[in-house]
Image (cartoon, rainbow, N blue to C red; front, side):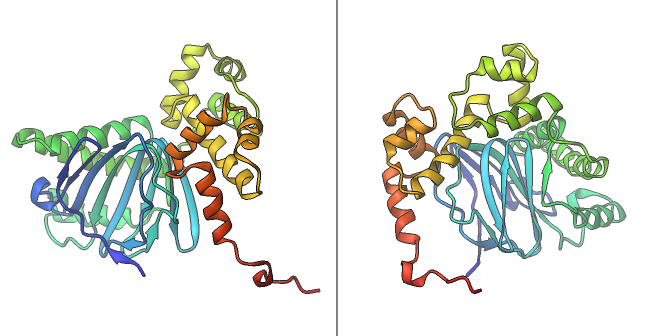
Amino acid sequence: MAVQLTEKYCWEGDRQVLTREQHGIPGICVFGHSLTNRAFSPLETHVHPGCMELVVLLKGNQTYTVGGKTYPISGGNIFISFPGEEHSSGGEPQNVSEFYWVQVDLSCKKDFLYLAQEAGDILKKRLQSFSQRVLYCEESLRRYIADGFQNVASQNPCRREYGRSLLVSFLYGLLLQERAGIMALSDEIAGTVSYIRQNIREELTLEELAQCAGLSLSRFKARFKKETGMTPREYINQLKIREAKKLLKEGRSVTEVALELGFSSSNYFAVLFKKITLYTPTEYQKRARASQPPASETPRKEG
């Protein structure tokens, strides 16, 4: 059963949450930032009545589910949930990542984002018209949301107003970007991503990938991180762990999986696996087996 999450003010090293009492912007419920270097507990099924939530992923990977559909996103993507929609991480841990999130109260009747009444009403209507749930967020908009948060959190009234204006610019920019149909990746990086996916069980070197992209090594690393939100090695490791899950479910041993995926040692593989998934490979394998129905419960195909 979905719950209504009530987030409280928080200002810690890996998580900062501003509620209405702190940011004081009509039409914004919560404005937050998260930066973690380890996976943490799955996001439970919940709703935000009256609020549209936008999660702006700067780096890493996350998985969200809405209406029975799963949406994996990576750095540079935005995930959108609309008012009253049940959503969660689908039982998947929240991964190593950095993201901002903002909950926009579309039920706000007056002074929405301190805009004139007509402008506020038009913006609310347009925000509900997004045709896609996952969007690419170009670099300038990522700067707007990051700088907006830091300024809104300030005690200086001038900086707070500047932060509000950046948040408004972010929302308008996102609407314009969707209409323009801006693609997420350049041809060079898209081709490299495709190459990585096709050869994920091989030992991939950065020099090899830079050559695939037709770029110098330093230029390739900078472009890759700028467009995906992750370093090439982080991206490769995320995909290798995803592939490792499949092999472990097939009953392969930890050592076999580590060798199959080109890891230098089974110990390093196990450490990385736990960092990304919260579980050791052995624990994950046991949990996967426990969740499988007995053979007698497996539905039979007719015909």
